[in-house]
Figure 1 (cartoon, rainbow, N blue to C red):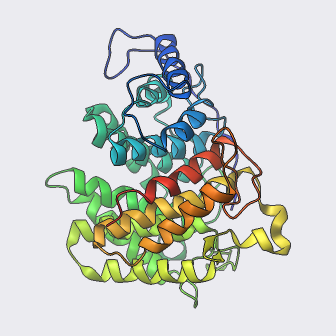
Figure 2 (cartoon, rainbow, N blue to C red):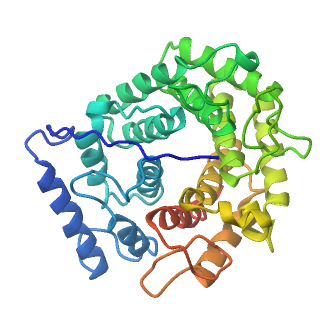
Figure 3 (cartoon, rainbow, N blue to C red):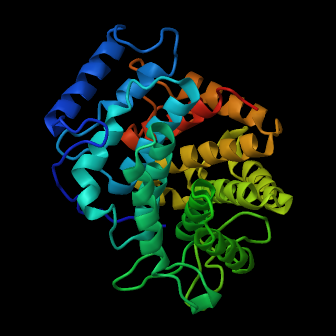
Length: 370
C-alpha cells in the first residue's frame, strides 16, 4: 500500500450542465446548500437521516480545487460517495460538486503517474455519467482507461503497473480498478469489444497471479519475483474486486464471476471483522503504525462494492452485515455534529473527509437492501 499526493491541474471553463456558470458560483451554491441542510431548510427531502452527515462531508469541499478534502485520490472516492448517495436516495442536493470537480480539473484528464489514482477518477466519472448523462463524463472514463492500459505488459505474465516513471510493482488495487473500469465501460458502450477483451484478460491474469492467497483474501501486490508479497490484506483490496466481477458478470452472464466474488467477500467478512464489525488488519496488530490517512477510506470502499455485488447477484446473504455496520457506526462512531471517524466499533477518532465518506458509504449501503 502506498500513496503520494498528486498535483491538481487548474483550469477554468464552462460547467458541463450550466455553460454560463462560474466556478465561484458553483462553490457558493455548494456552501448555501450545506448551510440549508444544517439549519433544516432547503430543497432536500425531509426525514433523510443521511443528509446531515453528507453536509459534514461537503463542508470539506474546496472552492478553489473542486475537491472534497485535500487528497487527490480520496477526493475521487468521496465524489463517488456523493454520487452513490444521490442514486440510492434520489436526493440531488449535493450534485453541484460533480460539475465543479470536472470544470476545475479536467484539463489534466485526471491522470498522473499513479494508475490507481487515475482509475478512481475514471470510475467517478462513469458514475457521474449515469446520474447526469453528460457525454463528457463518459468520454473522460474512456480516455483514462486507455491511458492506464498503456502500462499493461507481459511482466509477471500481464497486469497493469501501479506507478509509471519509474515503473513500480504490480499491485492488487490498480488491477482491480482496471477490471471494474473496463467491464463497466463495456456495459455502457453498445457494440464494444475492446474494453470487454481487456476486462477478461485482467481477470484471467489476476485470478492466476497469486494475489488471492490460500485463505481467499487478497494481499497488497506482487514482489520482485512476481510472487504474492504477503503484505497486508487491506479491506479495499477485498472490495473493488467484487464490483469488478459483478460488472464482468453483467457483461457476460457467466455466473462463475459471481461465485468467485462471493467466495472472496465471505472470506473477507470472516477474517477482517471484529465482533462482526469491519476492521483493517492493522487496527489490532503490531502494524498499527501503517494506519495512515490513506487507510481511512478503505472500509467504506469494501462495503460500497459489496453492495454492488449483492444487488447484482440479487442475494440477501450480506444484509445482516450491512445492517450491523450501520448500527455500529451510529452507536459508536458518530459525533454530536454528525461526524464519523475511522473506527466503526469506536471510539470516535481520526475524523477526516476520508473517514466521513467511508462511514457514509456503509450507512448508504444499509439502505434499500436486496
